[in-house]
Length: 208
Image (cartoon, rainbow, N blue to C red; front, side, top):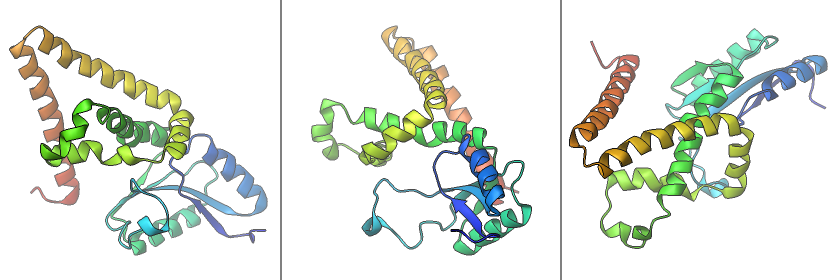
């Protein structure tokens, strides 16, 4: 039995209704529960795949709800800083799951799909950094990730449909030999990413 007053933390990749349920159950048991998700995973698992600086400068997502003990939350945040986390982000459980569908799960689906091309047989002789970035997480554990995808099904389907729609725009422009449309699509993506980079630099204090 967990002693009353203990701070209980989970590191699950999905939060959803689990956080509210655990908060309620822990309250009844006198345990202080805080939902967290360290954004510092690797494509490999097990003890021998561990590295000592995994959390260094990584983001930690905390997902407090009504009933979360504020003192426990503050303790978890302070512990995270001592462990080397660089940024602590607060999100609702539902928004967390939506963002994880986009930033993590969709990337894994794309990587797994991307490697299913006959050119993979000779890819190492022709690849650079962009190929390595696209294929790294295709080595994910299927038993774990299939469950994660299904548990977050609605969010992942939404972002997957949006990706397919955007890819279709590029495919149609290529089929139609529409150089002007291709330039527009590429420029649109470049501008979005440049704005994203600018925001990151601002957050890090790299811009005046």
